[in-house]
Amino acid sequence: MDLTVIWAFIIAFAIFAYVVMDGFDLGIGILFPTFAHGPERDRAMNSIAPVWDGNETWLVLGGGGLFAAFPLAYAVILPATYPLIIAMLLGLVFRGVAFEYRWRDPRHRGFWDFAFTGGSLVAALAQGMILGALLQGIAIEDRAYAGSWWDWLTPYTLLTGAGTVAGYALLGACWLVWKLDGEGQAHARKLALRAFLATSVLMAVVSLYNLVLRPEYADRWLSAPDIYFAAPIPLLTAILAVLLYRSLTTGGEGKPFWLALGLFLLGMAGLGLTIWPNVVPPSLTIWDAAAPPRSQSFMLVGVAITMPLIIGYTAWAYWIFRGKTGHEGYH
Image (cartoon, rainbow, N blue to C red; front, side, top):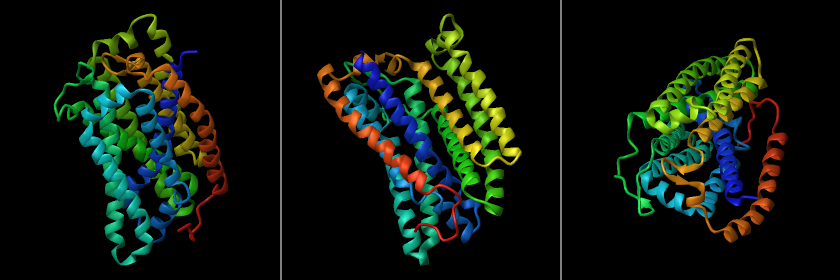
């Protein structure tokens, strides 16, 4: 058993779990100004009240796991993206504080609504730009970051940031289609269709951009034998996109959310296939960046105990608060 590969999949799973779970939370924040003041906004926020803070557990697991299992990658990625990481964390802080104080400080509810939306938007944009900075490649010399403070700011990273914002908005809108009813659901469905179109276009543009971003990416997607593994991903993505559009236009409730998750899963699979086996393109592989085998073995025991617990209590929370969100909420 290759422990390094196992840990790569553990980190990938934690990142995917965070993206889809906290993604729809952030998406609701991004869409928040489009909802009417009063009960409509309250119900949108109440739909994530029982689970939003638990969703961020996966961010801690992904970041902590990267530090523990791939310390060299952690030491390279953070200096290359410090401004984005700081912006993301500040956005998450403002969003979390706004979530709590919105109910406890009604006199300044407008300010907290703005902080909720602004924090969500900044966090989503920063996460997408971090992904873009990683994909476009990070300069490394003597096992350390060798680029400048502004290497992360390029047209490509702005494009991936916009794609992430649109994707999170799609997840958030599909979640509200599932959790709301009446006028709130109808409004969320309209937002989901718009977010779906934006996400589809941006996913296609980023995918095509990747083919000219680095020569090895084009080889991975267009040359045999890799093309045989890569070809099913865009095909399945197109099929899911058609099914999602049909579900949104024919009155589906829970189905659009699961189909949107499927789009994110295929997108992540495509990104993984693009950079494999590098953890930091273009030259740092997972084996170059990995911790010693003994450390990986020791940490694997802890993950084998804690990850099922995290999955268990997360599933229990979603099960307990299943169904439509009522007007009374959970605040």
